Amino acid sequence: MHQLERVTNLLTLLLSARRHVTFDEIRNELRGQYPDNLVAARAAFERDKSLLRDEGVPIDSVVLGGDQAGTTGYRILRSEYELGDIDLEPDEAAALRVAVSTIRMGQSWGVEALWKVDMESMPIEGGGAAPVVAANLPVDPRLPFLHRSLAARCVVSFDYNGKPREVQSYGLLARDGWWYLVGHDRSVDDLRTFRVDRISGEVEVGQGGAFTIPDGFDVRAVFPADPKLLPDNVDVGSDVAEVLVDASDVGVVLNQYGSEAVVSERPDGSKVFAIPCSNVRAFDQWLLGFVERAEVLSPPLLRQHVVEWLESMGARA
Image 1 (cartoon, one colour):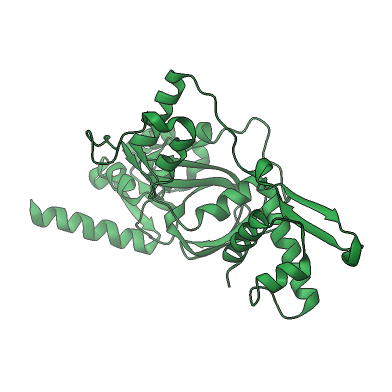
Image 2: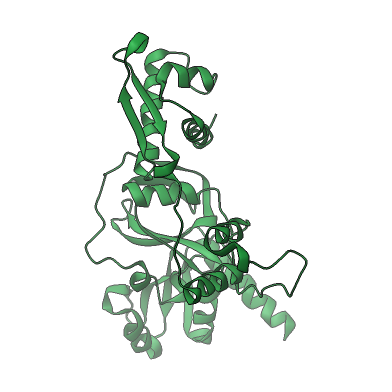
């Protein structure tokens, strides 16, 4: 059983408990979800409990008496866990309704959440015009793990573009209908942006408190302005391309990326530049501006893509 499913069941059990329950009782209620070995089961339970607390879930623990003297009991008090009444002004409630009505997260949770705000003003099903959706954001199964890594300062490990990554999560941002993770990639010792739906397989979350987010960090401010840095759904095996630029256009590229992007220089004055290509479609458009005065040298998959793309354009001409 996946840890997320087990933790969800543990949360449900502790919320529904009418009294504090012991570890043995929890293990019995969630039979088959914890390891048979007592030491391994206890370790798994402590990890689950820590995960819930890192997410802000108030697990109340007390030392029991009577025939359970000395044993610790656990429970989540609904009064501390559930959201209380929200006293919003009419204009504040209206603004919240507009936001929920125009953004879809793949579920109806937003609409249900509005019941807590002003049930009477919610539109009746089947009556009136449906709200216009301005954004439809996908719900990726990896998002809960990434959100947890942000809240608890955990390093996340995953495969991306065929390479293993270890990332200190600094922020999550939704742009143009996609979720992006921004963080410090330990494998290259630099800040990187990853499109969440392009992460291969599962996300592994490390121990909490593994790093600190830099003071004043603003994910919106560091989000790449260059569209070639935003990952798309075309994988060419690398986030950086080596491009040979004719001497006549070297100055243009230097103005865009600076001398630090120069990989090598040739006797005729042309230079090889390291150019971002995470977004292959944006890279195509950038490259097209140089016509025959720029050539992709690597990675091989990108070079092949550009050749095929140009050939298809020629065939349509």
